Image 1: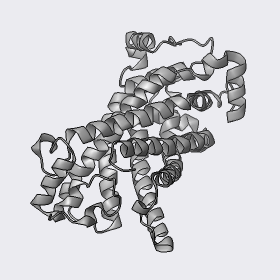
Image 2 (image 1 turned 90 degrees about the horizontal axis):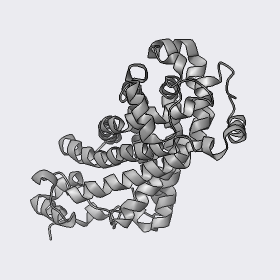
Image 3 (image 1 turned 60 degrees about the vertical axis):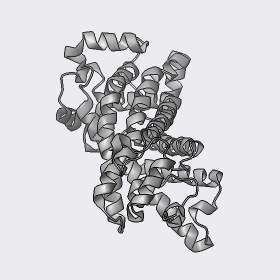
Length: 348
């Protein structure tokens, strides 16, 4: 068979990418189509099957929806500190914020916004991970040989950034609803229902004030697109560096390690990438949270940034967000890698 063993050498459980198969000739591409069950998507030779992308989308739903919902209590404390601590209406520190939530609102306050978080970030994950796989194959066909690190980084950034543009359109109505629920303090004017559908209906009825459903889309893109590019490039680059080091020091390739070890490395690399994601996108995250409070509803993004000040814009809530985003990103890559492995595609 003309299909060379080098394509599967890195991971015996992985599905070879169309880009990797380009060098193997027409027969190899036909082999790839057979191995992906459904043939090429849209009949395009350098794309994988619709089944492959659909499964990756499902993995993304699980990875993003579950993890964001799991840390919603941290999110409530973070959003309130970003929106209210400067005015003295909310503690700036995470422990004090959590203590206040449980003391005054109990479990209901600690889980506020978990439903739109689950649905919104599940929808985001569907496009973030699923379309990233699609754009990697699409752009990889035109990129040629990825014989330099910078070429791979550009491909990873372009693919993930393109996917996130669509992901944020799906996320935006849910994110606006979640933020409104979380930043509105008990007894404060302008509150919405704790029921997701009812809250969305209320925000839609007051669209002139709330700008629902896509009023936060531009700052969301400003936060999430660079966040996702860093998340994917940082993860892939760190993972590649780790496996290169392990191979040079122990002589073992990625395929020589068990699935459990590979997933542990996946989590660690994801956590590391998440730290840089949080730092780079903190200003836009602060502005999105501030937009949810009534006194800022008519203010422009530039005005809010000016009023907040450079120091607070970059640093307010950063410690909490590093803890939250590092954990989230590590767990997302772990769940996504586990799902792909269960589907027979190998870990991420």
